[in-house]
Length: 176
Image (cartoon, rainbow, N blue to C red):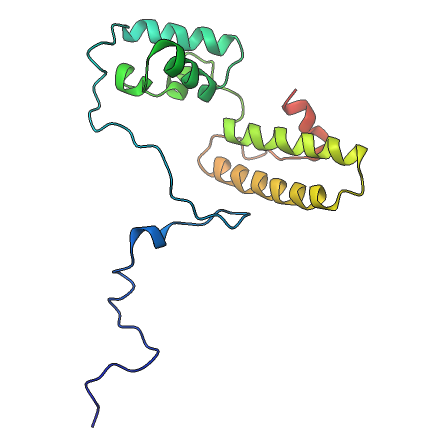
């Protein structure tokens, strides 16, 4: 008959479920890192008692910063560091980008895609001066594959028009 001892090399079906959360971290797309460090938000979602800024004032400040040409994440950093507003959404009830969309000041292309395109343009400019830089050429391929992947996502969620296409020739005009 069959022995009751577990077979060698075969893991029981419950062994994978018991893996530690640290080993379940997803790796980076184009590098070796599997870091799990991140900031933790406070449990309480109410603004601190010492914060005397009204939500209307914050929305006005956000609009003012957006008109100056700041990105949503830059606006968040300024509000956090200079005005003591840790989380805009805890104070106003909606996030910075949603506030900008309501007032019609949201950027034309999403911020993460914009930053990737900006990086690709700068690497391409570097390659014009140093055409033998093989590493930069390889990194440009990785950056552009990320651009295509992120663009595909944003087309799916209707944040970009379905006809939008990344082209290296016209990319510098997008980020100027």
